[in-house]
Length: 423
Length: 163
Image 1 (cartoon, rainbow over the protein chains, first blue to last red):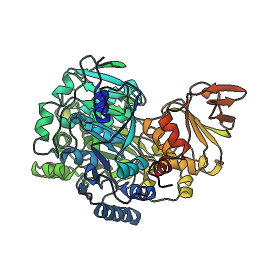
Image 2 (image 1 turned 90 degrees about the vertical axis):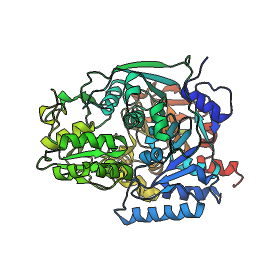
Image 3 (image 1 turned 135 degrees about the horizontal axis):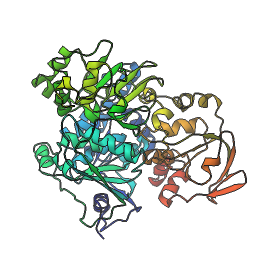
Image 4 (image 1 turned 180 degrees about the vertical axis):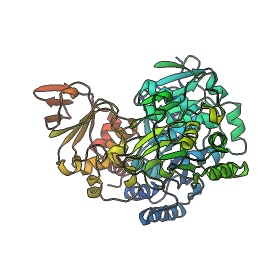
């Protein structure tokens, strides 16, 4: 019997010939990520009674969730992290402003095919877009990883999601992943390993693939793998921090489910408040008034997202009474956007450009919502209270839909004529 | 064996409503965390919850963010166990790692209402409600060992001979 991608990686890491679905294995991850929660993790680590981080070279720490610090408590946390990193000799440290962890790890060459990466953040699934096995864990587990380098994992069953056809601008992989989550539900792939495959995936850029792996957690998945190919290897050339070997599922691997989708003629999709699986085609929500529009985050803050938004915003103005926030995912993305003149387009349109980081996505700072306000966002979560008030509403959509809607002040189909569309 | 009063919730209770993001990066003591437990789902919870109460919920309890406070704030609020039809994997791990028992059970959950009493017998693997006993499967031995040691940190301290 052939093995799925998850089985192959977990077997290899556990030093076994094979592992069965459901089997618990003890493994040592290749890389581990923590972010602003490192302040709390370092304190838990000290309770274990171990003086030194066992493998400092395996840890990557990125400050992104509350950068720059908006209150003294955040500033103190960041200071404690800098001291911890120095004291423990953790060289892979990226301070405030470098970017969101899920963008920084790929850019700095840690998200590598066949590697096992764990992070104390649920969107650690993102690195599956590069052929890694990557999943979120909790803070106590990260503290134990600092101390021992080891953790237990259960071998998940696998789903194969086959996407045929091809996405056509302004439809993006965000519309596709919302469609998938809307169809299968918030627990549709609970504890499963998803393998995304098919022509539409092969045609996609790495940035577009990252959206799928990033949001795999939103239907409960443990990880979201995409087979590495020439595009992956080209991106990693000059970035990869170490040697790697790509891992592919066996042709006769067993899948619990095979789900098929067609990317061609997909309508723009919107997730309505207050769950990510509350998805409708855009016509059901056209005309909904918005107060804030957010383009960015670890889901859709890359250069291709900003290019698409700038194309729509160029020569237009953000509607009166609407705040458009632009949140590049990293310094590298911001620099690219500056060089291409995209930032100029955003500022001319009346947008507010934020520093790279998580911004208001998790409601900790920078652009939170008041009671009764509505935000249309390219982020990955729209839970009640997520961006501030529990009485605010969050809709999720693609960068194209958010850009078009920022201009009109209401949820708008990005295929509308004023953006040069065909509808 | 525990006997507790039920707090009943539906499907897909996410960690943002259990413990809002605006507190997630602030160092808070357990009592302060308990004050914000369930804040964006049920404003009555933090004020009325009593030590030994049990949460009963539908599918996919604890979905969303990996924030560990979603488990620790419930424990700090006095919750003795969470019974749900299914759990998100990170919440499940976080609960075990903090010594908060989590019980996956589909049968009988729809009949359990807020304010009812349930008793849980971990050794027998049963939840009893209104005279009906529902069986739940035992946790894998590796996982049970963590729970029995009171959570991951005491478990690892024991393994490393630090106790």
